Amino acid sequence: MTISWRVAAAALDAGTAVFAAINAAYFVTRLAGSGHEPEGRRAAVFVLAVVGLGALIEALLLLATFAASDSSPLLSSPQWATTRLLACVGSGGICALILRRAAEEG
Image (cartoon, rainbow, N blue to C red):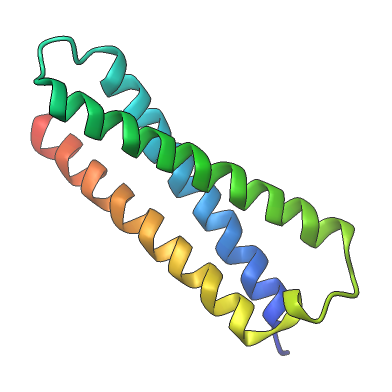
């Protein structure tokens, strides 16, 4: 049984969506309770929250595109799956750092 590049890219986008949702939730929550942190750190947390939300929206829209379109050769290419891998690894890396910090604090 072979898995198509299209299925691989969709699976990577699903992973990206999960990681990005965790990332966005963490940074939005941290931003809401960060009144005591320096202004520069608050700005960094805000930017990371926006990046997480952007990655989540992008992944969800791409998943919707996969569901709605059967014929695009781009969506079925190894190049497309590779670009989705990079987004998934980036979001997953941030998520791993968040989970490590949460484990250290709790």
